[in-house]
Length: 615
Image (cartoon, rainbow, N blue to C red; front, side, top):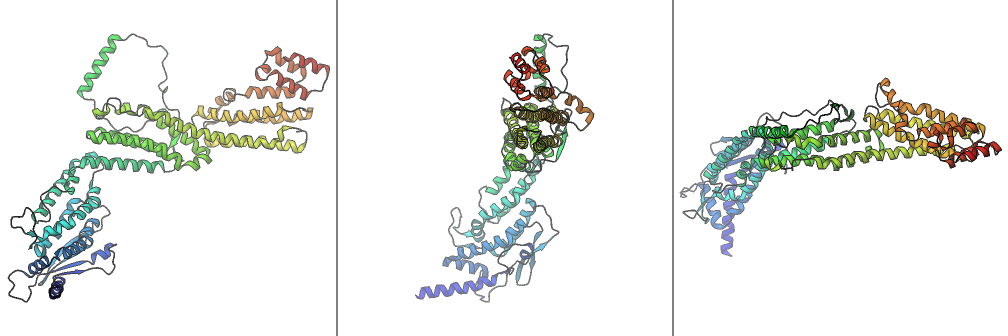
């Protein structure tokens, strides 16, 4: 009991002395969350001797050695180390505008912060190392250069310096903080700046050397220095991460901001290095072999220079930038180390695989609802697929030899991208077809149109169909390639015609007035239908597409023959049939023609004779 009482009494007295020697002045708030609160932090290290003149060593040495003998040194130093990390060292790393300031007073050394002009960019490692070294040098001089009775292997006198005890406690966390909050941000984003990073590696080595001289560190190479020296791997990782982040930002940006692509358009290719001498030798050997074996098979008819070009259309600005990003990244890969080159190459592949997964999901609702965006997405996918065909070949002999044996290709991604664009556009086409059929369903099967109400319903349905086609034509105009535009509009118009033809041919009784009104409705479609074929903004350039309506609308001639039947007499119908060899026979089956004759004409001998000729 006496031993315990004396020990606790001694610990209390030592604690009182320790609090006088090491005085923390912390901001009121418990969390050091802002620069203003951090600036209020001060550390006072008392340098005045104790009154007991019989103590030969310095008072700090005596107190610390006493703590060591009583087994309480680790507890005190651990608490001190945590405060040092939280209140001084970490803020110096996190806030570039903080600078440590040392003021010597008669009885103490005061460590506080000063602020310089704020800087939004992270501090350079060189600056951070200098700040931390200054703080640790002050602590080493005033407090930590004290031998304590703790056995450490490798020490000649079996005693360790207090700086080493503190270093063992805080170095792991300090090192992680330096890496995560300082070195990570210093990794260059461009391979051209890699050479300048030697300065950071040298600074890291000097920083560790200084810490070892103060006994904060042992002789081993630390994680900090390993991280700095392994710059090529970190550069590749960071570059790949930056590329993927930039690509994803482009993918999640608006699709409707577009740019016109023409056969003359090309991605702004970065300048590739000139072929090496070895490449010249390969090319010369290949050309000699070709000349020796070549037979003149050249055709007099030349292909157009745009034969394999992407047709004129509109694509998203973000997709154009995405392709430029891919080209720039591959260009940078050609100037990088082998490992970095491989990582950058697969980062570019990852861009396109990410597009395949992100864009249809992120923009799903808009792609389903908005026909224009579906068309732009279709063009985007075709544009990417078009470039992927040759992207690998353009860089094949510039990448590392490990990628030159066929691995440097993007051709395998082409079918997926084409399918992605086609499926999206076809889904939109199906939705538009559904809307057309729904509008035509309100036409009351085109029956009894001699009744004003029925005629009004049928006329309204036809007008709505034409209005929908015109609206689609407007949003797809100058967006889709002309041929794709005409095929799409032709398919939709054909859907409407098939529905009209099937409804009219199914009628069992068509009066003369019905026939006139049905013909009037069909004439509206025949006159207005070709006008929806306007893929280009200039009206004069659309005429040729409007003249080719039968090419794009499969049942156009069938529809024209139906109009003829509605206005023809029996003899004209028989003449058009021409024993199964006339234009009518090319569009309708005998059963359909007979059904129409029975619906249009009364049962007479002339009708019977006409029906007999339809076979």
